Length: 234
Ligand code: F6R
Image (cartoon, helix red, strand yellow):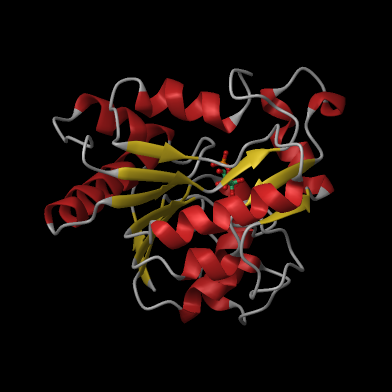
C-alpha cells in the first residue's frame, strides 16, 4: 500500500486527479467509481478538466435497493449530477436498484464486470471499514451481491435523507473479489470519523471484520488521506 498524507482533503483530491489522469494517459479505459462525499471533489476536478471519457467505461460500485435512477439520493442520480452529464462516457453501468429479481440483477452485474475488467478503481471507506457496501463480516470471496446495510452505515448515510427511516436498508454492491480484480485502486478517506477505520485498514491484520484491510493484499493500492483521517496512524 502506498500511503500518502496531505495537509488537506483538497490536496489529496488533487493527487487522486493526477493519478487518474496518469492512468488514463497510460491507456486505462475502464473506471470503477464510488459515490459519497469522498470522491465529490475529484468529480469536480474531472468536470473542470479537458479529459475526454467518450471512449471510456464507468462501472459504479453500488446502488441502494428500492431507489429508482431518478431519485435524488440514488447513486445513479448522483453520478449523472456530479460527473456524467458534464463528462459523457461511452457507456456507464450501475446496479439497478429497482430490479425485480435480485438474483438476476446480481448475475447481470457480474457479467458487466467480467466484460469490462476495471483498470482504475476509486474507493471511499465507511467509518466501519466497509468498501463498496461490503459490510464487516462479508466474505472476501464474494462478487456482486445484495446486502443488508449495517446499522452504522444507515446512520452515517442518514445525513442525505430526511430521516433514518427513509434510508434504504439494502443495497447492491460489487464484492471484494471483484474490487480486488481492478488493476489499480485509489482510496480516499478524509476527516476524523474515518481515522479508526483507516488505522485498521493500514496497520491492523487482514480480516473480514474490517473489509478494507483486504487492500493490504493488492499490489497497486494508493491511499490518500488528510491530517484528520491519518491522525491515529503510528
Ligand atoms: C459509495 C461507497 C461507500 C462510500 C463510503 C464512504 O459508492 O461505495 O463505500 O465510499 O461509505 O462514504 P463517504 O465518502 O460519503 O464518507
